[in-house]
Length: 233
Ligand code: ATP
Image (cartoon, rainbow, N blue to C red; front, side, top):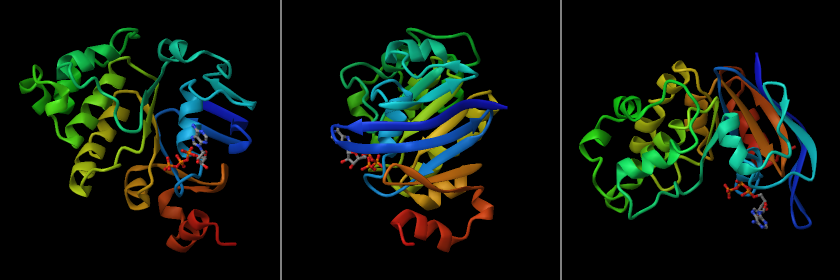
């Protein structure tokens, strides 16, 4: 069953077509990873889905509902939550307060503060600490928890691994099966191809705003991925 359907989506930054006629479907219950080099348009795509970069043309449907022009603040109640690049926590608020920001416009669903604490057990003990005192990996976990608390159908995660040690990244990605198991679909942007191939059910490789390769990790050869990533014909 298709959860999100993107057709011929184009998003400009000024004259630049950062996303260029992109079509893709996200199926319910899958982890779909968008890979691609710096500047391929991955963040712009996620930001367009979150309503932050309005598209020039094309359509986006969530469960058949046209959300192409839906303002950003209406996307959370519609079922889309973004974990932005760089986490964007409130540094002077506590861990718990940062989580509760996500619950502000929440839908009903499995995600409560207690459920997020089950996912990341250390968070319960450190609930009263300021977010500024957390490590990068811990901040990333709080950013994910905050997004989950809105009970999204579709969780968008932008560059989770940015600036984090590989072991920390792996530990966070290990929670994905439980997130998906609770009924949340995940669309992730990941520059680390090895990580993406490890955690995703399917990957799409973007090059200059276009999807140049798609498939299940097991069906794609390293050579295919490398060529798509670097744009080698
Ligand atoms: P990265 O991993 O560096 O974030 P990306 O694949 O996410 O890369 P985008 O950030 O979506 O790529 O950028 C796509 C293109 O759009 C790049 O050429 C980038 O320079 C340009 N771009 C991104 N944001 C803006 C902006 N706010 N204003 C102008 N150009 C932008």
